[in-house]
Image (cartoon, rainbow, N blue to C red; front, side):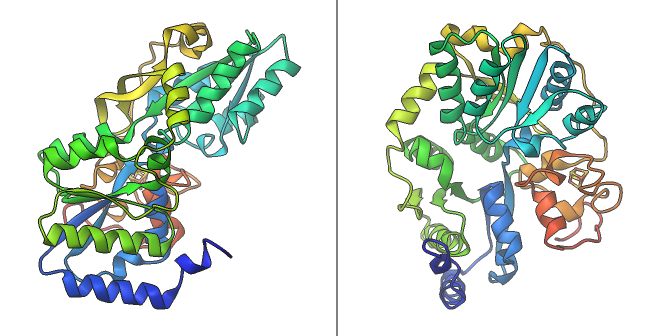
Length: 371
Ligand code: SF4
């Protein structure tokens, strides 16, 4: 299959691994930002094929995983209302809130629907004028254009029974927060190609310069990642600072200007809390003033919700590259995809789900021991 088979060629993969082995002279820790990259790495065993000393750690780029617990609880509070049709992408339904999840309340009669595009919600709203259709607008910069389009269209069509529960987060502030942490181990990043296809490369340049690191934007196939790792290791060995673009078949330096313009029309940057990590300044989007009427939190008055995280779940440390899933004492014991304690076990991009699904180290080891 074009654009797939050529990026899964085992001979080329072996050549890249050999090339990485030849250039590496000392240990390096590289973080792949996106959960999609993590799943490819674990599925194909890329991290296990790398030479000793090149370690990959998993980043926070799983939007489902970092959606704060209180947002899940707010979603549940809104979705249980009889006047609401609550719409979401499928992988949010099993994410545990404090007491329940969207899937469980759907089973008890709440009108929770899975959609494949936020624009589907506009159609549902037009077909159900006496109920409010709420879309759970979760995601990084990647999903922001489509969500912004839905809100802009709702305003244009004068749809007063449509609202969004916004939980948008941004990649660059999270990278800066990780690099600023006293526990940081990350020396280079593999940036997320789909985010950069929207936003471009420029906002990564100040991060690379401030923290004196290489950032290489990659795609999601095995050879994309191996090429990105090779480029990143070469830059680390040369002490080269800057932003590389392995994914030039999809990412332009200026991203998608029309998508960026639409995002900035509907959303503005705000502080956001990340599940397991805490608040990161200027790391999310909220609706701009002209679109406030579509804000579900205000409409249903659910701004204040008090929540309690599972004390066993260390997903915040995993999302910062400080721990790996098998180092969680609950992994494969009290936490499984059937009975998840944290979002990283149920999201299709979650690191714990990747380790579980691909049979990686099912027996937990003591926290703090060698990986
Ligand atoms: S295995 Fe479960 S409890 Fe442990 S970090 Fe992952 S999601 Fe949290």
